[in-house]
Image 1 (tube, rainbow, N blue to C red):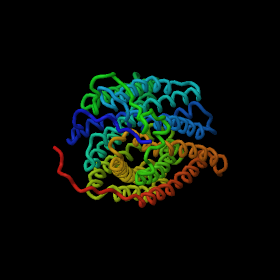
Image 2: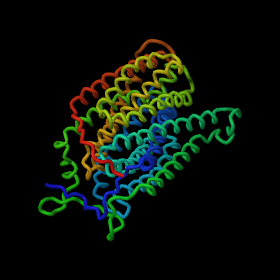
Image 3: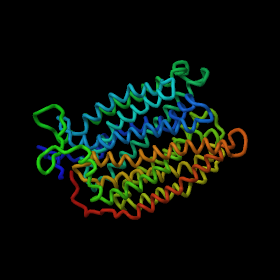
Image 4: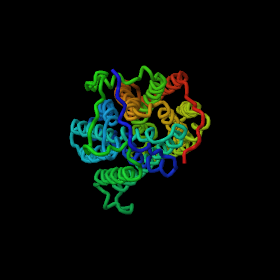
Length: 462
């Protein structure tokens, strides 16, 4: 069976080349990161505490993250494929961005206000499905419309938007909750008090809609369908001209002929397995190991320090990746994370944790920029949506397995470790976080098996 390529566009591919175009393209990622930084790092742990018992809070948190990521994974196995074969007057990506955002917003409010655990799980599943229906096709715009030799710079803007969105989101969250828990000592406290979830949901809605519109207006549509239906899906056909099944086309997928992409995918999966063991537990680390209770605001501030370092790493990582190669930047970034992890784990105050956290952030930001650029270099141009759907599995599979196992391990270790108060949990988190080094090292080892394409420089496009 051979796959019919998408119908040739009637106008030349409108390549993006200016920095302002990269910034507009990356703008929606700011809203996505604003959302996920607060949801994964603070809101999910907080909702797990509200809807479960103290003895089972880790399992409840892990279940929320794992079940939502599982359904998101199923969605991503199809949405990129569908987007690649969509025809519309607004191209093959923008319709999914618009519909995904509009369906996401009601699901977000359902999650924030659910009063039972399984109702929250159901709402979280809807959030994952709808938002990923928007973001997978959106992410494919970069390899669609950016030349290979500029993937590093464009990816740096995406990573920059990712980190700035996370920092801004955590800062907004910290303000809303600090004002809500204050008596009347903060400006606007009377307005905020008791309405934290409503204000947070409104912030999500404003950013999602506003920055979605920025991409729809500022980024050219490609390829445009001229005449015919407003929106249609062209199912590829087999050699005899008969429509092929979805499963046959998807699993035929060419991964066997793109072994470099598969190896890079496995490397990233191992690294993100370590990330999802660590990141969702920062909320509990702040309370048990740093002694700050309630931990909402302090967790946000610690993560902002990490992300500030990530901002610096991202700004330099993309440029260095284009100049010296993606692999050296990835090795340097993750190497820094490994070297500084134990300094962070044995900190006893937020001030002591902030310094290694800052430099860990630099390493992580450099990794994100270079790794994204590496993937874009290996993805076939006419199948970017499908490949991006599979690429996102490298973050979803670790979230399903890593976050759930970390939550169960937390509950099990706390029940069996000696000590009183928060001491068992503090020790449990050090043990769990220490295990991340194994997966970071495994990811770097797999990366050594990936040969990086280094195409000759072409004349720069205007």
